[in-house]
Image (cartoon, rainbow, N blue to C red):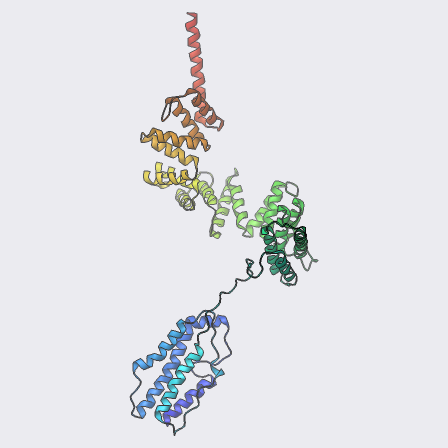
Length: 504
């Protein structure tokens, strides 16, 4: 009887909320996720242990065989199996919503009592862990690739416009407008004038809604800055029936910049730089470019860094390196051209406070891993000459040069021409030099002049040799200029000798 009273007390504690399973209001989704990961399994298993141990006490007091370990673990296995079937979208039901079975009276048999307790454990766990149907894929929030909801047609886009007009959230409105404008550009050409008229009507309404979202409604309600940016882009590109107007595009960007919108400030800087829609003002361009960079806009940080490292003063160059480093640290998809530019600055004396060839090599390797051909070519020359602290490794040099040359890099092709010439494969040396020369490499043009002059990998042709020599000189190759000067002196000496012989 004392044991039965302890069972009653335990059930009363569970009903009153003092038991191991707490009775509370239905938890939120976030709490359910935490419970699934941390506390749900221990809590339910502890509850099963308490009730199962109580059943064994009753069996011992009545001289019955206690529950076997296998029978004890059945409840645990039920919990674990059902937990494994749970999805992240399920929620637990309130334990107090359904009371436990009534306490058995003293006249009930011991076996009935134990069976009731065992069934209550299983039912109690199953009520909490009843698997729900497989969750349906949830739509992404504020995604506008919704061709299933809104098939691309004039009628469906008109319905979407009517819905967007009723939205109170300007962010949602702008995203619906962007989707409508993009969808209208993808519409096929119409055969009937009626459909064309409907499209023009939809464009006019969309333009009106976009202007309303972007327009200011007094000092208390300024226009939505991202909408002002998008409206400026529409004016700049002539989208959605907007007439291309650089002046109106600049005004939209300028209005957004007054709300410290980073990309709007960057666009204002570009407009001032090129005089697009406003006067050309380098000082204002630098001012807005710095503001956009300080706001963390990565294109502005990159551009400011590139501008500063190409200035003459060491202070500006060091600031440019600092901006490029900050941009690289904040950007997970760094542009390889920026890595290459920063590497050049770090290895060139006068740019960095102290040149850092090791860091430059690391940056070249990162850019080369992105497939950037100039960085691959620089690594090839570094492994060829042992520059930047690299060991001389011709295999690595050839590997990087071949990858860059496959992308059409002229300097890499010239490196391969030099290598083939050193290995006495003159035909391949000439072919690589020809590819590099037509790719714009001045050094390869000079090499073609020598190949044609001495017949390396090709037939001798003095006239073509002179043509390649002059092409290299036009590209400011100093060796080509020196060679032309030498040839002119040789011609003068030869002419003088011929004239002397004629007099004799």
